Length: 131
Image (cartoon, rainbow, N blue to C red; front, side, top):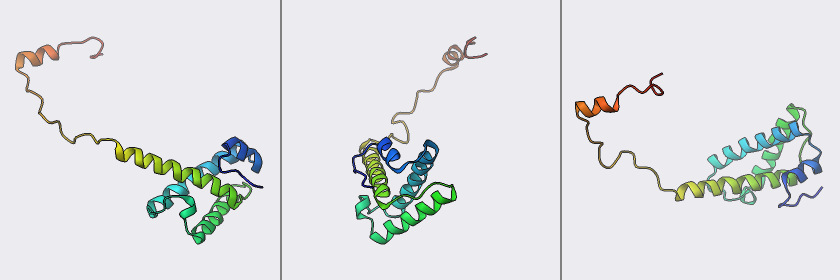
């Protein structure tokens, strides 16, 4: 069964014959695996850059995890489709977060201190706030 790399998730689900529950578990398990692999190997920029031995062991781990839950095994083609999408998604998220300016740890100017009268006006009873 050939899966196009640009196939929609529902097309892949139908092609491999997973019910919704099986599909959601497959999605979750692959996401956890991808996060861990990318954390351990930040130099891997795409799924195709993973060494063949790692892709084979990943497929074995995935099929073992799926079989424990009574889910049919997947092929290398299905795993390539899913992991390619996950790696791309994670790398885009990382790039987006890297370009966002971080918030300063402390305000530049400390807030002015309030005098006693001003503090009392600000802390006056508010029936909505002070219920």
